[in-house]
Length: 140
Image (tube, rainbow, N blue to C red; front, side):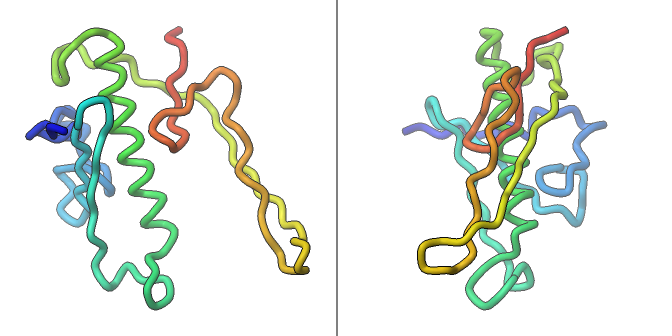
């Protein structure tokens, strides 16, 4: 599998590249990078010890940021591919904005411990992308 040498986020316009999770212009950010690897995307992040929740585990907010930024990078790459274009060619593909939902409901397991139901499905108009739920909605 060949991995592209330039990250998807490196194609984002400089004036918009401030995201805490993946923005190159955010000096204190995580600087996550999403790379194309054939038909997949790959991102690697090694958390620092101060991202701890409890010993041996990172806190959920970090995980959410990584999923958000990698999912968005993957969706951006998919939008270019769907348009038959190379990353970074102008104009950028349409940005999407659509609602999504996630619900959890505590319930008792057979052992009497509390467990959660899986998140609800995204709305019918949205297409799941990159195993997270950034959505690609129809253009207006």
